[in-house]
Image (cartoon, rainbow, N blue to C red; front, side, top):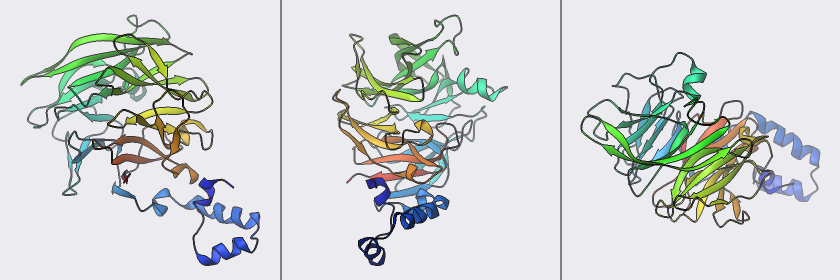
Length: 348
């Protein structure tokens, strides 16, 4: 019996006596079967609290006082104030085709990801989504950056800077077939427009060796941490030196799904979505903590949502002070990123 199973069992004295007296495996399995109708929200640890009953892809504000998220794929962006407990809509006043990500620049302005229009949801989600800047004063509609991307960008804590990935799906004829390219640039925000400056390509990879997704900056923006997706629902945590192009594999676990999500402020660790507990891929992930030393050995499980059939924990992001993480509850049947509420875990 694994630790993850034991932690689900009741802690009552009566139950403990039954185990000591030799309770059968049949009884234990019957009790576990009864949990199939439960949600992880029914058995949250003392250091975890739910702050919204809806939403997905949550991120921290630069000062750690607010959390931004989208309420659904192709939805609006919202912001939750941790002190007041008030949740407000950031984009409801501005017509749009909807967004599936919101993130903060170091300036406090918002980066939105979504298409300019939706005629085909699949194509809009994977081929036509682009980046927009919403000023923090919310005085004007989002500014278009005229840059499509695959998935979402990495945002720097140190400067208004982004990293993102493109493929032939976004730019047919410009990106070689089967390749993904990792780019970075600074964001310049004015009164009437925003633009990307100092653009440069940092890395490229070819499928099936790797399909890139930008995740985080590290080492004073000298390194970009990225997901290296691979066949058979596998993924590795990797980083590239933006000056030399040298790539390091930090997870070194080819049989496990490891996707980096939220890096700690000191850059020594990152949170990862991982299936090491069950080997079921990204449909049954939990949050783990990986040391970025290149050995791939220091990996600690943080959440246990996938122990409840049909559920997963995903999209974790570490607070600016490194003392908390925000994450979401998801369901195994849904596509990656779909969430049903935002939670916070205290590390201390």
